[in-house]
Length: 95
Image (cartoon, rainbow, N blue to C red; front, side, top):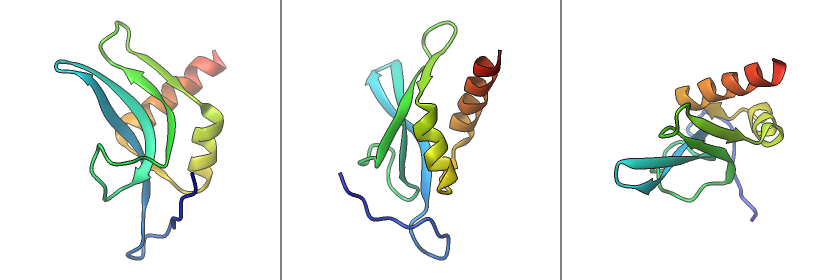
């Protein structure tokens, strides 16, 4: 899959790392994806970074750190929730 995009904020395409909802009613699961900031939540994603299941106790999440770091190095802005998940991954890796 080839994607043309720019990471500038001067009226051009801005990319964001955010959650895309899946699952049944009242049983959400999420994919952590990279997509255009102006697109709807269910639009086509450029890349899938990981998954997040808030229903499990404790919440279960899996993130491909190599992909996430590569996108962050390119200037992709993570949402608040994704940023918090990335911090949790760093804590568990360092422990």
